[in-house]
Length: 473
Image 1 (cartoon, helix red, strand yellow):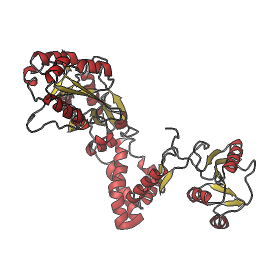
Image 2 (spheres, rainbow, N blue to C red; image 1 turned 135 degrees about the horizontal axis):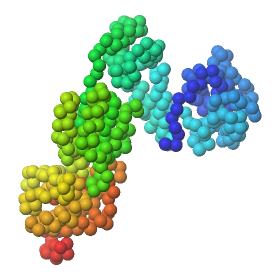
Image 3 (tube, rainbow, N blue to C red; image 1 turned 90 degrees about the horizontal axis):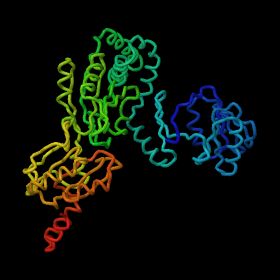
Image 4 (cartoon, rainbow, N blue to C red; image 1 turned 45 degrees about the vertical axis):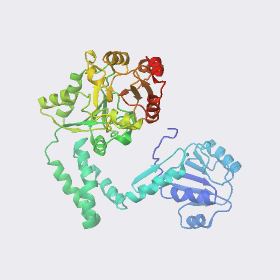
């Protein structure tokens, strides 16, 4: 992020702008919504600017920008639409100590002005680092359509009530009060009784919340999916927005953690196979501790919490402590990986069932029903199996699995940095060693990427197949 978004208090402060044409008009329409003292320098100003000056909305100086014109100014805009003149103005304004923006010149500007959705005092600023103004305008139009015009009035009423609301303790109880006002009682009262009704509703609501019973803590055991934030369920996203504490696994992507409330406490309890990890009993203790303190906890697990997530152990601990809990399923890595390689997890005539296996457990490499898995047409998703690839290969081939059985390794399934490593049972260990994956890997036994599976079917019809099998072995 090159440009850090802030909201600058311009009440009573100087803002200067040099220019009198279309570029100047566009900026002034936005700047004049603020409480700044605006001065425009233009030898030939547009009639609209002249009218604004006559109405006292700004001060118009009908000459070119000169040294000292930006003294004590918070912001300065160069908007003459002449590159050389704008550069001269920027140099002078910078020397006067002002932050400078050259219209349509990202590299020459110390700040940029975003697209704005105005529901004063609610303001939404949209920036694209100057890369896609058309995209910013589209987002602005979408938000304008979605945010009711009454939103600003509700916010102004609420702003005047903030001191009274401080009677509620900081944190969840105060958040619940404001949430009920903005999304329930406030809009209802405003629609029925207008501004006075909304103000009265605030007072009644505060009394209700002051005398309500203390909130009890709870834990939601939430599946974060395979990593792509767009694959997060709506329920999971809503819970992240409400949680006081988020206790998350190492594999939960940063993009998903960004969806948590800024005020939420994030606790990393990451575990890494064959590496450092947080003890399961410590994770359970953390959940119980925060819940008993009245917090709403989201226990965020990669994929689906019920698949190799030690879910039962955590539920048992919560039950033993008398803590309320709920499970929110997520998309598991097997589903994301199969979608990525263009294959179905089940297929008529090939496999009517599939297996979910773990490559290792707390005791080391995990033993499975190798004889059953080695049969033709079997499909399995093998979690945490990359480090045990040679062990898996040996067990399966020892029980009769064909060396040319496809095995596809998918690293970081669904994420932007995903990688598909196509192999066979015979080539799997070397393929993984060559690829040296660093992210989480799931092995899709019996499945090849769609294009590769078509090629494999052709080779199996080829009379030279025995020679191929000998090479693979």
